[in-house]
Length: 287
Ligand code: HMN
Image 1 (cartoon, rainbow, N blue to C red):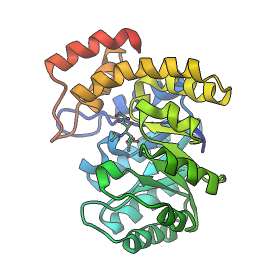
Image 2 (cartoon, rainbow, N blue to C red):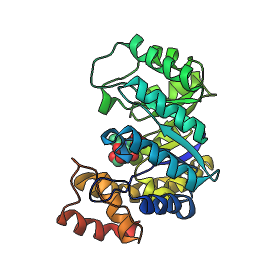
Image 3 (cartoon, rainbow, N blue to C red):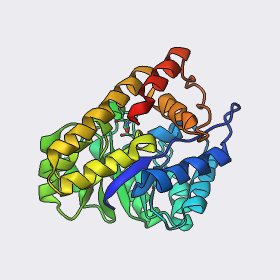
Image 4 (tube, protein in one colour):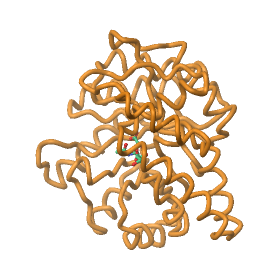
């Protein structure tokens, strides 16, 4: 479980149903053109938290069918409803997903022990490997080093999707747990994450710039930081526009301009504005 993982977008039809043809095209594009090492399915990027359990299962199943064993697959199954999370985890495990990942339970201010017990139940019920999804900026859950220590010692926990810019924490964790996998979650600073010993990265923008992320990852292995920085800086020209107009919306528009059906957004997300479309067109030469 090393390298670049695309946090897969989900193409929807205008009525909110899955656009299966588009989803298969996006998967193919990621594997055949971007050359990423794996896919992270059902993350924030997939608009997962807006979807019904049945729709989430449909996505897991279509993606697995399209991928087979070509690249590694991680299923994000986190849900505030533990029964749903377990059902999704068993489903993805039966389909053959290489690992599960679950966001830390959010919205309520859960105690650390409550969060730990949540993971324990998920792990015991599914029996699959688990990658903890830590994203303090969205969940408000920010584990201390001591808390990470307890979480990483739970059975089957193989690593963390580390979406945080606390590089000291990342470096300390990797030194304490060299055998665990730390996948960095902020695309605009993924080079720094890799320099600070992350084992790779998971991100939304890799749907359209995965080839660049793979290049950065490889250059870091070769200790060619200046060349890697050049690519990161070019990526950030694009990410800046994406953030201004909506990251997921912009990714879908870029895919569309490349002839891939990125589909619509799921309500209540709005579609890309007219101005956004114009701005995205202008940065296409960088992609
Ligand atoms: C996921 O769960 O889908 C992603 O892995 C999340 C990922 O860390 C992205 N973060 C969010 O969407 C909040 C980043 O790829 C992010 O979109 C990117 O760094 C641009 O800011």
